[in-house]
Length: 441
Image 1: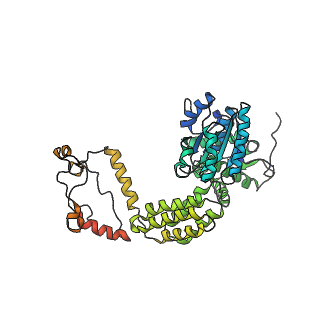
Image 2: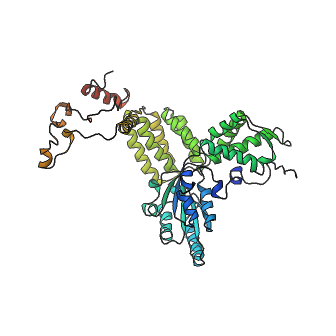
Image 3: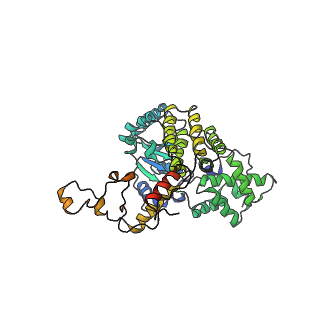
């Protein structure tokens, strides 16, 4: 048996993630709720049908790969367009080619990465072609498509939710890479089980991140002995690879979750310097400013809440301003909102309240509404005692009527537990006056 060729890091090859991209559905890892036997994509490929779809899910879950597999199985002409760099002119040119292909009995599949970054005019340019079947479109997004994809286009697409890969999926991918990859299979690679598990854990369900980390770790380890084929990886090698990879912010969404996590935790931790630094990292890396503005709205409710109710007002105003003016001036707006929220008093009481309430509903089911809380617009309803005994709070002192608003089967404990700082201190003091048993210290 001839010896395998040893490829060095200088060999002009695509990255490991690209080399390991499967060409058929049988090699595809994860997403069994879509690609498993008798599931939607499996049946679509088997029946040689094509539908316009939007793949919604985290990075590294196989959105691009799945689109390529579908196009190959359907024998369709495949075009790929990035919403970051694509234009209306690009879309119209692909549609023109699709019409030509259609006249020759050939299907066309257009894959649009990060479709949430397409503006309205770009999305409008697709509508007619998608509706009349000139081309099939598959869009990919890490964002909820209902926020940024226009309704007419959304109504013409099937939305499929992709999930982060499971540990067993990632473990199988590592095994396949070590055995089949043209580079890695040429080494005597030692990857102990605990190191392998650490690599999987650090990837966060992102196959592309895992492959990139593994490839960099191997390159760093080989740097100590470039001519050798024996490569041993430990946790320190994986950590070094993660740190080196983190220096390159991937504006296409591959690693933006790591940076947005640092950003969110800095705001939550009341460190405006760190928060504005991570915000600058994202903007310099080409992150969509609207994405950052949307996260700030969530932060304003989840981590500040009623400790400073102005937080949500300012975050929402910032979101509208960012959409209206765009970059580079949007950075000023984002900095104002970020530093305000980071400097504000913090409370997650509202967030925890809805979590407790939802758990109570799930645990006990939907409870009957007490008769005194039911509306009685007709005489018949009044005869059935709807609204009987209800006390109108505005007729009482301080606008408070002491009556029971809960269902007969009450949730355990207090749902909303305000903090005793910021504006919530005022809220707490009012509530403890009116509900002393519920809010006793």
